[in-house]
Length: 118
Image 1 (cartoon, rainbow, N blue to C red):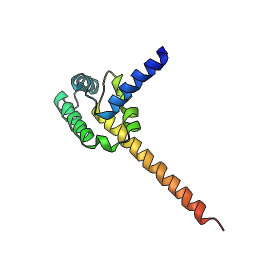
Image 2 (cartoon, rainbow, N blue to C red):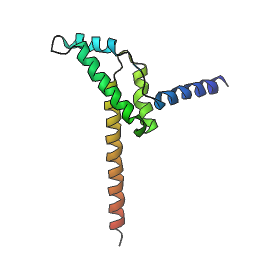
Image 3 (tube, helix red, strand yellow):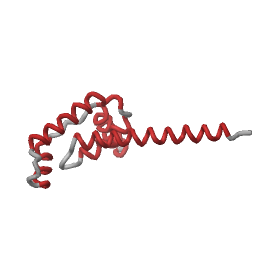
Image 4 (cartoon, rainbow, N blue to C red):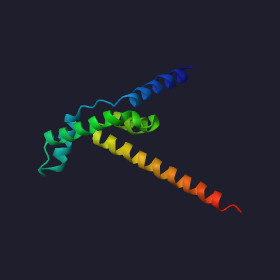
């Protein structure tokens, strides 16, 4: 019974993650990124600006991404010390590309099967 309750609570958290764009504190992520890269012209402010643009893109298109993909990409970020809207956006774009490629392969496979019948 406890395991079932935990499952229900956990699934509720995943639904919340998938329903809206998660909110991250980007300053620590950007500070760490700039520190790791050294003095290569990137500043915390430019990093924050890029992350903000990615967040706005995510908010604009969030509902267009399948819920399972949103959850799959957002869940690891929740446990990450350096979450990133840019990484989240890239993950969702890659998932979409993969889905599109898979769908095209399935359609081509079905087309070959229907044209090869005598």
